[in-house]
Image 1 (spheres, one colour):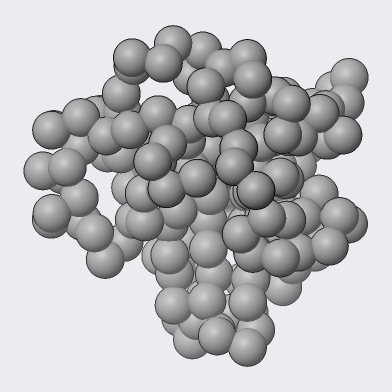
Image 2: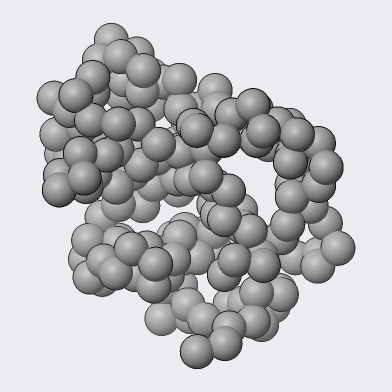
Length: 168
């Protein structure tokens, strides 16, 4: 199935996930988790925490079979000619560092207050898996990388997987 990733046509791919208190990028991430990770509706919705106060975390998926913790950042651009550079990737790398230890993840939970990310970390059992599961970051967007982003990923490609327009 060919999909359009240009805005606003992109929204047609996941209109069933749009909700009054859910951002477009959260609906996009739910759609992505269903399409590419083959999660069921409830699993995908439960893995997304994209809202104000989320500490840079848009979603978390724990794969117990592969022993991986994947932290997601999703971004939708309304401009087809925009790109993602190293600044967004540096910020995301900082987000991932919040999961380097149990203490850092607990601090994230304490400072997130009532944001969904704190509840997601708690109910997922993530704290018990830090240190024994591989931590991954996945940045999903409907635009492509610019050269500074490409250069950044040459150094940090083990920590961050970048899923861009051309891969969707």
